[in-house]
Length: 204
Image 1 (spheres, rainbow, N blue to C red):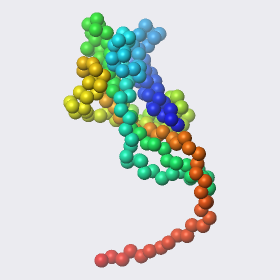
Image 2 (tube, helix red, strand yellow; image 1 turned 60 degrees about the vertical axis):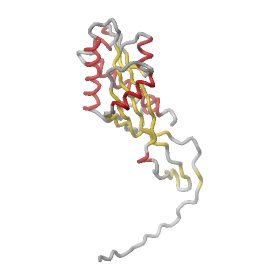
Image 3 (cartoon, rainbow, N blue to C red; image 1 turned 90 degrees about the horizontal axis):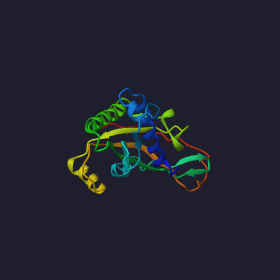
Image 4 (cartoon, helix red, strand yellow; image 1 turned 135 degrees about the vertical axis):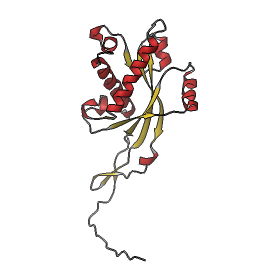
């Protein structure tokens, strides 16, 4: 499905939001019923600041083709039908806690939010089943979330692209994201007979 990127993002947002709302320390900030106004959003950090929205920015800033899975064999869906392999991707997200400049406890709150993010994905780096959202819901998709250690040069380039000053943030890579082909399966000749072959391994 070509909506795999959005489904991955929605899954991350919903997963983080649920855990923020059930955390005793963060619940007053993120749970609407408790008066919380903080949100987990897909907007860039700059967009959240400009719109005076506090919370966590989960910004998809890079999409990379997964070279390790690029040569996966086509799937034979029927004896005479061959489905082209999906495009395997690795998605990179910048996670940045945002608080208002007028918030005197802002820096501490940002560190608490980021610490919770680190704890969440350290405890459960694989999202599957009921964790999945949008078009992934009800599928056997598994998403693997891995903390990236970016160099100073790499993180600087990211923030230069945002045209903003550096803020406390971490990057996560999410893998096993497939964009399925939009073409019809190719009709081929079915395999009628498979003849096994035997050989003898001769030592030196």
